[in-house]
Image (cartoon, rainbow, N blue to C red):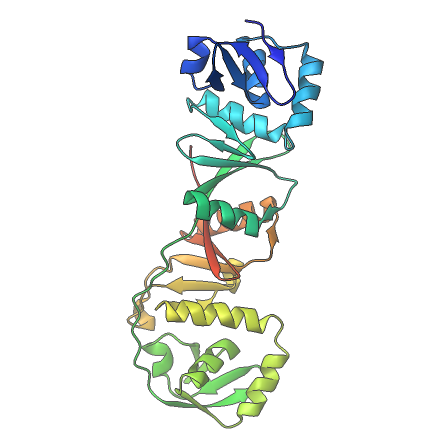
Length: 304
């Protein structure tokens, strides 16, 4: 079947087989095709529009992120999806966002798409043209921890606070216990201080230590928000994240499984860093959440 290339679309005479498979849009006795659809139909022997070099140049002029867009589209079609290109997305039963592994993921852009569609499947195309799919969505973040904390006294030990009240660790899982004392992080100490739980020998020294702690303000903002959501929040350092969170902890002796790893994100994230973080999270049976501005985005690998 022969067609022709127009400025932005390819044109075919109306054909029930092509239309029934979800290609293009019909207008009168013609079907108008997105450039990627035209390329797919020609390379699969279902239509002819131009010699392959001319067709390729035309598609590249009209599709900004070709060829990764095409590889994702072709993969979805091969899997049986009635996929339709829509701007920089591919819409099927779900919404797919093709991205090259060489291009950073812009968080503001991703959040806008998640707000519009509910969830987005990132389709990351690597240098060998293989595709890995990650779901990105906004999780329902609500814990179950209710705390009635005892008053404790503490003293500053350089960039930590120590206290002899071991219940703050054993019952409520703040800090870590060592040799009969509990050592609190600066974040935990400030949170307990602000909530009237901790009495310190020198509040000024605590704030001096905080000033020398890089990135403290943003980490503390996220920490407080997670506590407000009734989570138990601990450092995620050994998992390569800022925090790990528990829905509820009855005691330090009987710890449940922590469900999420939370990392504080920048305006962009490299696909390779995302792949590494998701794989690490999955390897320890947790899910990755990136906190960015006032949003939390959950990322997880998904089969399509």
